[in-house]
Length: 196
Picture 1 (cartoon, rainbow, N blue to C red):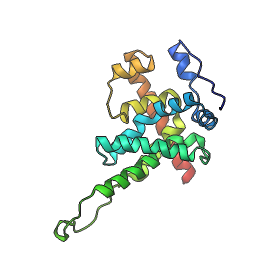
Picture 2: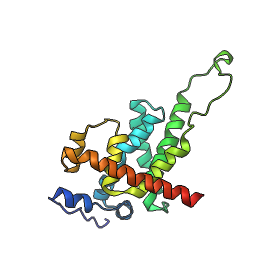
Picture 3: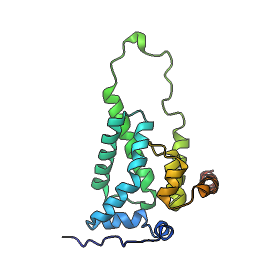
């Protein structure tokens, strides 16, 4: 039996946000067989994976299956993940591929008359989406949690629900969102400068 070290109980919500273990730490603990670490990873990323599946054309039911199969893929790849800081991007890529696979299996056969004259790119903003998701991975912490809740959570929670979830006042969510979006923009600009 692997050594299982439960996460310590933290009463102060602000301290809890800063005391959250990194993805790398959670992955290491998962490799040791720590079920608490696995639960934390699932709680951290299930809404994001579900929303990626929905945004890539999956039905609500299929998005649930895709979320589950993405976590199964993570279990299979635990020992092979090299860049632990890009776990969110890795999960989103797997979810996207699973969504495309499900969608392609469920497509109906088109007659020649139904085929469009000029095929269009179904993912014209793929590069932008990947840049945003990579920047979110690098952003981390409170800002990552807030922006995922605001823009990727399929339940579309309002400011009040997000404030409650994060242990913050509702009046502080808007200004925090502005600062986080600015930090995200800076990370994306730095990424473009490195590529250019």
